[in-house]
Length: 168
Image (cartoon, rainbow, N blue to C red; front, side, top):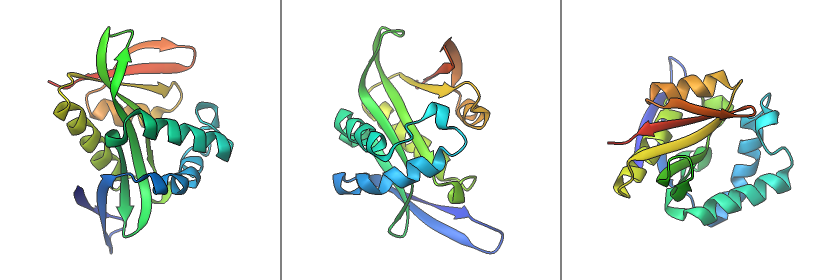
């Protein structure tokens, strides 16, 4: 689907690709998810069986909107988007980003950006004009990442911040 280069350090360039996830790859995402949420467990599922159920739910919502980033055969990130989501707050169908995860060893190297670009283009290809996501209120790194893409805070519920982005 897509590919990119990432400077892992000043000496090495890593090639990565972005493709749609295959159902048989879902089990590989469990450990990645758990490692990526270390220190942010209050915003995540913490038991492998719960993560497995959640990933199957994401895949079932919109198979076309679930992408993985790979370095060689190793999955180093994923984004679970849903072009079939009806937002009660927006009162219309929106592109919902339910999850974006990058292996901690591969963060800050353009993989998250490539995943975000991919899911936003996917939503646009489906004719959607708004993307929506929720993020934990103390997950400042993720909040700042989303702001770089033009997401704006549109409300709060408990310890969650709702953010949206106009896709037009």
